[in-house]
Structure formats: C-alpha cells, structure tokens
Length: 162
Image 1 (tube, rainbow, N blue to C red):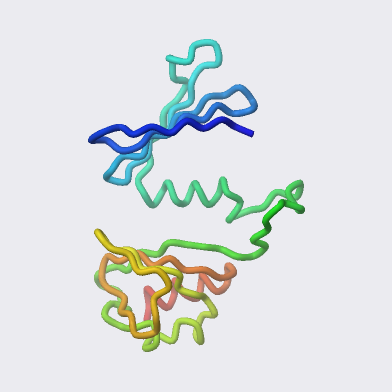
Image 2 (image 1 turned 135 degrees about the horizontal axis):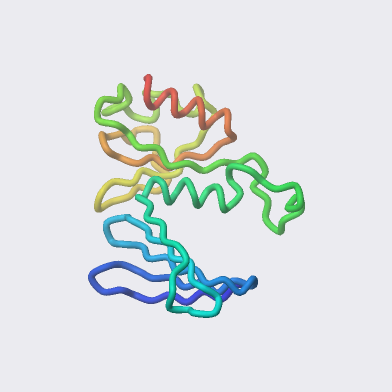
C-alpha cells in the first residue's frame, strides 16, 4: 500500500505526498480556492519534478472519479473488497439560468422522473446532507446525486432543462 503524508500549508491549503509502491512520488497540493496542483518527481532526484498539472475543482473531481473507477472498472478488478457496481456519484452545478432554480426536490419529482437520489446540497459556506423534498435548488449550488449512469443522465437533463 502507498505511503501518504499529509501536511497543512498555512494560507494555501493542504499538501499530500504519495510514495507509490512503484517507487514514484506524487505530490498533490489542494489550494483553499479549489485548485489542485499535481507534481510527479524524478526517481533519483526527489526535488526535481518531471511534470506538473493544475486542475480546477470540477476537473479534479472528474479525474478523481476516473481514477477511482467510477467511469470505468477494469476487468481485473471484478472482485474488489467493496463494489459500487453501477452506482455513480456525481456533482452537478445548478446554473443561474436553469429552470430548476427555486424549485423543491418534490416539485421537480427527482426520484419519480429520474430514479436518482440527491445526497447533498453544497453552497459556499454551507452544506445540507440528505435534503428533504421541501428543500429548494438555488443558483450556483452544487448537487451531489447518486444513481446508475442512465439515472444520472436523466437527472442532469431535468436539472438543465426542467
């Protein structure tokens, strides 16, 4: 198993250093503003970077879902210890012009129309885990939703088209 070192970077965010079983070293810096920086280091010189990538919050979440096997599960991993099978968890942004803005989960009939489940609402400075049917979607809110790929697709259509 890889060794992961975590440290605070005051005024910046957090740093995670991963020493992989392969011998590779990866450093991930998560900035307080949501940006992520990934650094890959030379094997023989742990101070010299081979490459660097900067991702915004949405890109980082997409990459995380790919690496975590949410988009594609390799055939060799058919028997993991914990299997999510077809479950997909996705973060969807409520755009200000969306017809869903100001509507409750019940008004949108999310579960009935899509089969997906809303797990949480996330807004700047607050979050609501397991929102109820009377909770409203607001502009610029991020909705955490779970379901299979088809349910997630239907949810995104409902969110963006009403």
